[in-house]
Image (tube, rainbow, N blue to C red; front, side, top):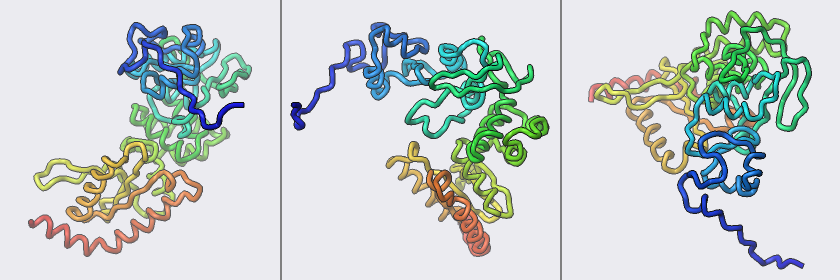
Length: 339
């Protein structure tokens, strides 16, 4: 019978990955390219050790079952090489996986905890049945598909249309914003919408495509902006609003807001707003409020993605309050300008 009080020691790491900042040529796994879990198993690097290497920052997962040494920089070529390792013949990369290859963040939020399925659709008219693969058959025109480093993938425009149709609307707008930043022409996107008449999600795509904005720098900022549109606020949101120091140099940017009433909204994600960043954020918000007379509200994940989706109500209330007090705050702005 085992002793419940006994502490089970973790096996010591092999010498090639013990007390090192990055992997070198002594590692039995590739250190300059992606590799599969099967390849690692053959090299003697089992799943338990891979998990420790990922936790220690020496490896990073790229796709389900594909890893790369953490010091290898991200690039389009790296992403294509990762997909190529697990890509069956006669398939095209679509949807979230295509966005990831193109460099647009459209992965589900659960991706920070587990690798998402690959979106690989068949060109041969049959559905693939493989663990970790979301598959099916999709009608694609020749102009919908491009070849990147030997891998077939939906074009940025087609991927934008598909994600704009098929994702939850807050994620869909984020994908549209991401592809507009990548260089997709919004006028071309608006023209392409009619092509999907009768397809699933086309009504959503028709609504969201005109709202795309290259100023949104992250999916949560896109979601926050959509909450603004849905809240009934009578003026459209502006993105990345600069405020300037007294000497005229740019000082701080506001994620989403309205210059008309000097109301701003910021999204604070847990990943980028730890204790150190929190102090800077508090100073920034205080300066905007006291030195530039902005009314500011802060939003977090639960506001934008939670069950209640409360961001819209808070945005509307904040905007109305800012509009009601704008005249009195304008006096503050004038007084500050005279100082």
